[in-house]
Length: 297
Image (tube, rainbow, N blue to C red; front, side, top):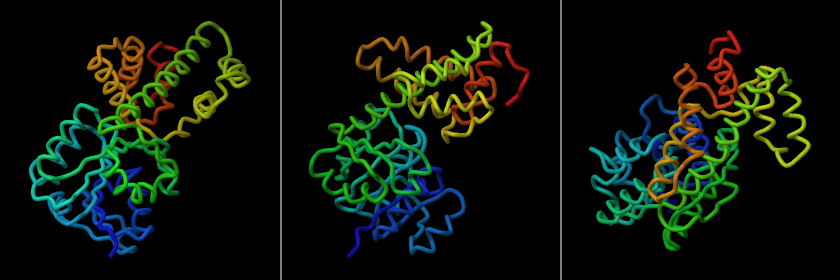
């Protein structure tokens, strides 16, 4: 009999492709959604239940792919959550970008209810989710990892073990901080170039002929020609992730000097009306904040 896998977040940009690939691989997929059910999942034989509590009671493994640590707390331990009356042997897989301290707290609460917990956040984007080519960073012990690996393999190309519970979210926050630090540095440098009378395209060209020749440079370089949509990730979520990173740094007694600056840059862009825009729009936002363009978002 196929393993019964629950999914929370099947309507999301990442969650839809993940859920679809779980079903395609042959698992018995059960899901909850707050909006209309994805028609393709229903056509593949997936079942919808009314609550997260039902999901926890029916499934052997439940994957969560939603936005914030607070959201995860609610679906796991809130009213009508997964821990309400969980199935014996349930494993919860937290694929959100969350806070390690919250992850460890939820893992402890789950353990008290006889439920195992793993964090397995993701990198890459919606296109790779649809293709089953995501990366995941797993925080779990050997026994739990062995149980969830086949499910992870249904939507991931690369599965990297980060350590015990919480380690996956730790590495994910480090990953996102590094990316946003580089992104905001490029956006600011473009604005400084314009203000100083230099061509920012020349900067992109010289970076591309050295150690900075990478996909991020191509994404941000495209903004110079007006293309801001090469990365599907909202600025508001980027700001949230960097805030989680600065809290993590503080928790381990490291001063997040660079992190605070990156968070401020993203916060200014969000306050200028760009929170719902994809991350590359931070380039236009930085121009606007500094009075270099009359464009509106």
